Image (cartoon, rainbow over all chains, first blue to last red; front, top):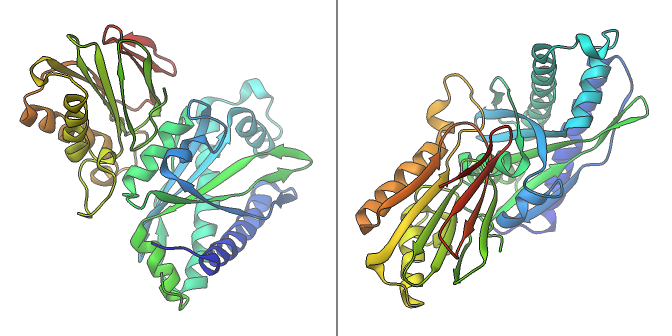
Length: 200
Length: 156
């Protein structure tokens, strides 16, 4: 697929709409103001994809949501461990850190995956008028490279170039850096562009 | 030397070939001990769906024969080549979607079938599970070291 500036503008706009909505719902969950940076659209060569957080061996918490319906793909949320910890503490404010069990941590992360994934997909759905359904999320703690190659393989990324939408968000002055990675199957990406009247 | 996704590399006599953070990807290490020559391919997918794909080492079915040919071209003898494979995890589970997300297992299966068809014995394996792996392939003696978070180091 050949992507030029109009395709990148479309993806950036999708990122803006999706991330803006996700920030609003996260702020409802946290009951605090959530600021989100302007999403950055990155086109990466396959070999560079595992380096987005610095290096393939960096341990991260990943929350995966599969996209089903009129388009297939994957949304992968990645958090460095300290960011995930700050996010969890913000959400379960009132608990002392020692009282937060692994089960609570996991369910908080899954809920964040649910909210961010479904709001991103809702925004995308209404923008391009396709029916997109998120699966239940799954969480993993492992090397970032392992999570990324797994996402690329599942979506059969034969194109050698992958598209990543990166957003940072800030809660109550604390930087909680989260990366949202949108990996559409190549056919889904073509559908998005076609739905907007742009050939790919 | 780091071998990235879909890449391959061959070294002679000494040096280390590395795949960092393999998830469902599979690292296929071929070793000719008589020549002290090692080749490593970083496989992403089982088979190409698009026939004209330009990068053979992204796929198990095309990448392993490609790596073998390159090694023979560089002086390895096919009869003394042995294989070790690592990776092929399933990094997460979602109920009812296993057929879609068990690509690591399919990578391992096709890698093994391809090696069998080529008549290359597999002498070491650390595959499957749900963990990321970094592998280091020591060309001086053919050892493959495997590191995973929370499991320590293994050698095959």
